[in-house]
Length: 264
Image (cartoon, rainbow, N blue to C red; front, side, top):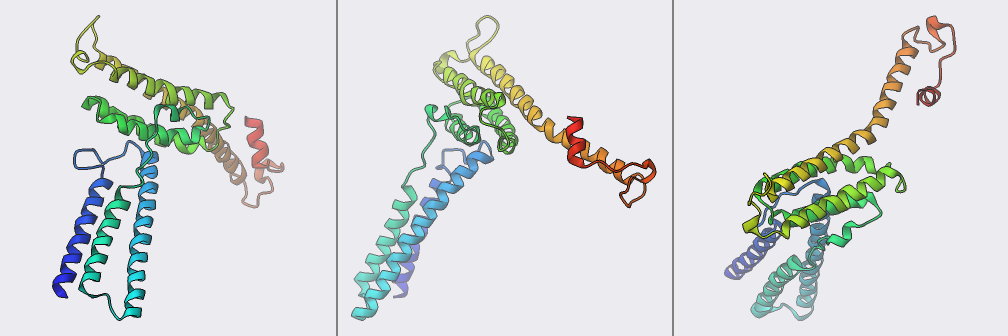
């Protein structure tokens, strides 16, 4: 029985190793994410797979225990069968369902809050097809998109800024990368008119990076102004006595919301 248990352990470990390699994207794929948005999507996907594996293996062993208690044991053949089924469950549920990778059309979404994570995941799928310097610059854009994501929670979907984000992140960025990928590799470094397709892509991504940074700053400006108003209000309130009755000013203290409204 000891040898049998050891064999089953080896089967489970081998299947777990296979699952771990798939989870990392395979031995020939880069495992790191472009940004937190794509990382969360992948983590959610693998959490569902882990749940499916736990349910399948748990149900298998519980069912086997019940059957064994009824018939007085499952014997050597039964144990081997359960071990094989456990390994099969790990492999099958480790491979399926496959993660749905955003297609180009999926980036044409009205919800800018979903757009960032989808775009990051789409960029990851294109990264291995791009020159290394370009692939590295995608990480910078991914960091900027991570900063943009929380601010999008407050953006009205009909606001002009939302439309600008949809065009920049959901159209201009993927259009540029797709256009580059259509160029044969042998021509990507061929100089024409003082530049090459690779340099043109680098320059284009740099422009997009600056635009994303500009949008980030625009969206953050409201919060920066609010913080400044609150700081002035607190300074006004506590620069006199701490009773809050106006101190040396001899006038009632303004409500913060009113002060904020006047400043805006």
